[in-house]
Image (tube, rainbow, N blue to C red; front, side, top):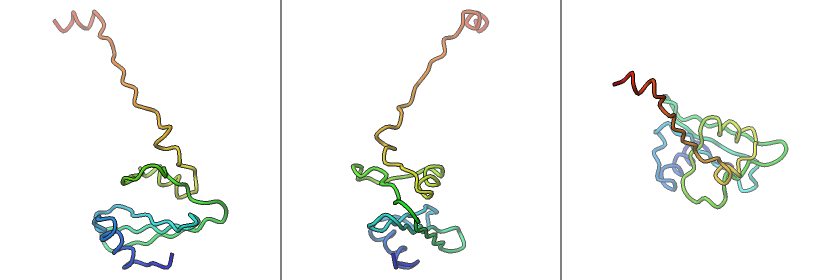
Length: 111
């Protein structure tokens, strides 16, 4: 976790093949999962946000998922606080699509 702006910028660009100037937040976690560094570009310069947990470890989002992981702002806030997000992909409820029956009165009114 000794990497600073330039090293993390290089990893975001070279290893992750992403544009560090995109405005995305790039999260780097140490092997013990006790510290993270976040790099993002706010339009005026690079911002580095660091955190080390006093107790516990940062969650593994889903160790079986090997693709790019995108978190919402709310999910990142929970992650940053040390909440458990391991089950995010496994137990997330599927979308429920409801259809609302059109009453006969509405059908007749539209004719």
